[in-house]
Length: 126
Image (cartoon, rainbow, N blue to C red):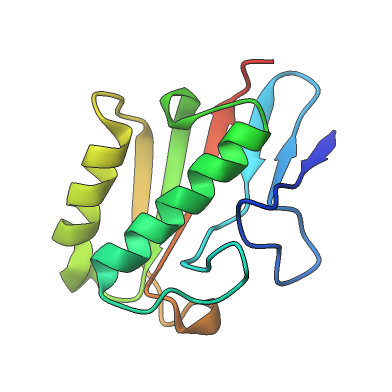
């Protein structure tokens, strides 16, 4: 098992890794919230926050030898499912023709007051 760390995404805000890679070719990202690489929360609407989360995921997946095209399963946590349509539009654009399995759940709160958190499971190219 290997911990993945990149300076192009926010450091973990707790005792965990940005992602973990298994010896048999799998990459598991920790949930990403809309923090920039300096750890500052990106304020704004659900669109701005979702874009930042995808920027973080792409950086972490890339550091782990993967990409959005290799993602098999995604879990999305949102504080307001009334904002689902906007998040879903960005999700579709960022994944393009690729359609991973997905679960989306509404939660009472997320760290730092974030409105969205996304975690992914992907294959590694390496």
